[in-house]
View 1 (tube, rainbow, N blue to C red):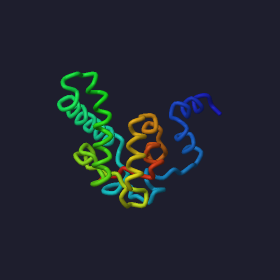
View 2 (cartoon, rainbow, N blue to C red):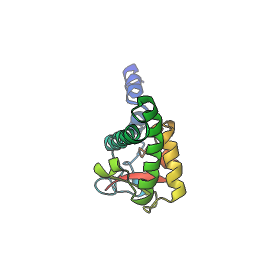
View 3 (cartoon, rainbow, N blue to C red):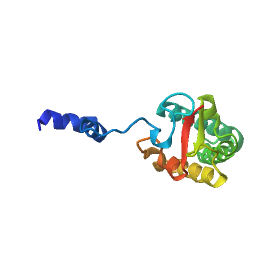
Length: 155
């Protein structure tokens, strides 16, 4: 093997090296039976991060304006609770937080149905722990979604 090939595969990552050797990973969501594009397909990472940013900003505004009485440090702590309650209420009822709704996303069960209360609670608590949310599988689902058997899709 040429050194340039070894360095190129190392820089490209293990997936690129496996694809060069003939492995077929398919598209994101294929293993879940989701379409490649359009409504019902796996939500892109950029939109998911955008939705998270919007939801966190809303949580901070609520916490700062209603609960922290102008104390910025307390607002950050209160925002975690607001974020949890908002996630539990909105994902548990309509399937999407305000940020997800604005960006055209929804959280559904792997089988296409709604998430139950326990699965929404598990997903929300794990999301607050951050680490499970940044560990992804090849369908771009965070560990919090995998453990709750959920997937974020486009509306």
